[in-house]
Image (cartoon, rainbow, N blue to C red; front, side, top):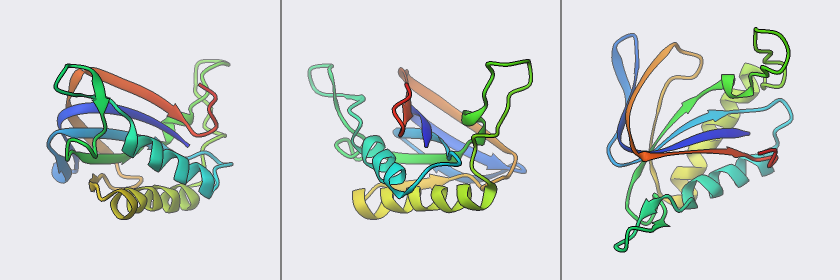
Amino acid sequence: MRAVVQRVRRAEVRVSGNVTGKINRGILVLLGVGEDDEPKDLEYMAEKVANLRIFEDSEGKMNLSVLDIGGEALVVSQFTLYGDCRKGRRPSYSSAARPEKAQDMYEKFMELLRKNYGLKVESGIFQAEMEVEFINDGPVTLLIDSKKTF
């Protein structure tokens, strides 16, 4: 499972011009599911994302998580995080999970953030063509891979 996590001042996602998810201060999570992902990857990613200390404390140090600041999360499915660009010019997506598995893991990820961590979670629509608009705060952008390949 892979994620791009961005600290944002605000973010929203639209499908066909309609807002499907909108948050204020918090994190934007672009989430990709791999073909070999298992429940342990899901649990690792939810725990890591919820507790990632990327918000500044009173001394200006990145010491606080989205939970600590009472922030929100906007989660958008992004199979292209599994695009392999090493060969040729067209990315290969053979490592991405099939849509049925990816959707199930995507929904379970959001449910873990809500139930286990008490986060307010908004989302896009799985497999829809989406427009994501956000203000990156910092900018702070991090890559996370549950297999720890980077």
